[in-house]
Image 1 (cartoon, one colour):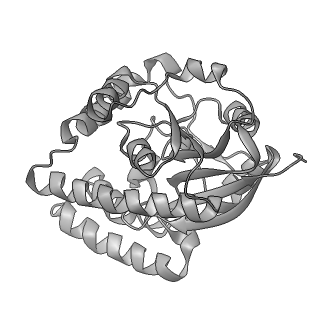
Image 2 (tube, one colour):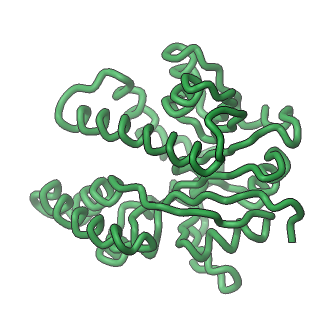
Length: 269
């Protein structure tokens, strides 16, 4: 369904929040299985793409925050690879993750303790220079409350980085209802550049920068081909993924997934 006021598309009648783990479980188990010891073609591809994307995420954060150290809140930190990367670069990182299995993985793998979502209530206002959400915001049951809380937690002039799928992308238009990034019922919200910018603006943030996530078009296209039950889904997905990527080189608004960088306004409108 599409909100007639703000244009945000949302999943109608999703499962209760306490029941969502049954849908997330497969994704959690896969990330724990892959860990940092890749095996097979898919595992190795995932490993090398993750390494390149970690470098890209670092570049985005540090270039847009105009600093190479500071305080960072990584919301929806999953297994903690990005949090660990930023800690190694000298950032003071607080990670929030709702699933115990991933918090435990981070503790054992990186000796990095994550906090559960309710523990965010103990964090002090004006604490962070940067807040990041990498493919997390579309899962939120309470996006308005979350944005208000992030506004409180950021220091004046701090930035919020959100990466999420783009329903106006080339691959979304191509696959229609088979587009894998709809990911119903796990994805509750489906944004395009205009709708997410308007939503963030209402909560005191101004869009400063956005850029594509270069590999998502391939991954999403392959999954979409599998959902259509096509033979040679991998090859067909790679072809469509390359087409989507090529268009996004000159038209970032057509990218499969987009990283948005918002800056906190001194006084919300």
